[in-house]
Length: 333
Image (cartoon, rainbow, N blue to C red; front, side):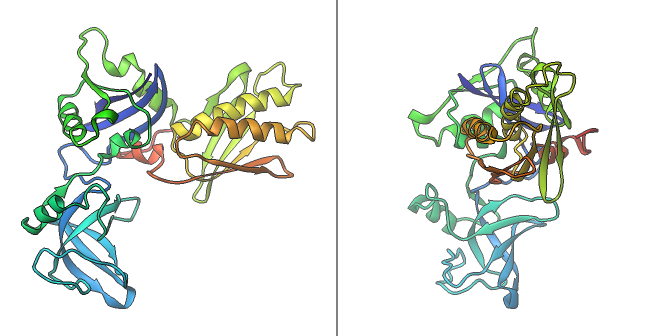
């Protein structure tokens, strides 16, 4: 059974998507629960504070002191709150904007004027028309609950009452047939974190070195341009069969790519093996990647034995998410 385990760590919510007791992926709230928090698809009454006409963008304040980037396009149809009918935004305008990108590295929030399908209704627009500056008239999916939007989750468990209340409110807006069971975990003997080894698995998922079966291991290195995974036979006494080691490495690499939310270009340097066996390894990797809801693509294996994989980015990689919790990068990550 797939379930989402939600805990609180350093005042951040951490969710782990688990199949039975095997954790498949993580999602971590970008901000502390007591901070001002915005989610993807939140609809807010924003105030235009600056327009850069020659570069076709504007800044929209979505909360006092928090501005978001808005690209200005010819075919955009802003919904104004201050009675304005049509036309491009100017300084001082109040309009409905939707969060489409969360802060990342040096970039802040990004917003658009088109509303999500479920929010594009008379009730939402009418609420906005009668609202005030910075009011959130529609709440999107909290970042730590994003696995719910594409995963088949049957149950959510949490031992934190703040998380329970927020999740319960979020589920009220979902189709009853698609609504997972929400359970508040209470056990004085065994903490929820310990029961599912959430913190331990998270710590392991931030290390460079990952052990695989039969003594082999992976070394996962990230760079600005791509991620490299190096396969090593280690103390595998049966390493005379490189294909067997590579098969185990491919299975583990596919799982780690999802667990760590690695995106973009990924190169895997497998152990050299006999020519002609590359297609078999490529097919095995493609089969493993089908379990990933983001559907990564294993493109090919180069003449140098490097497998090329691409995976789309929907959220920051795990190491970047965890950085917001710890405030510092984990040694060896």
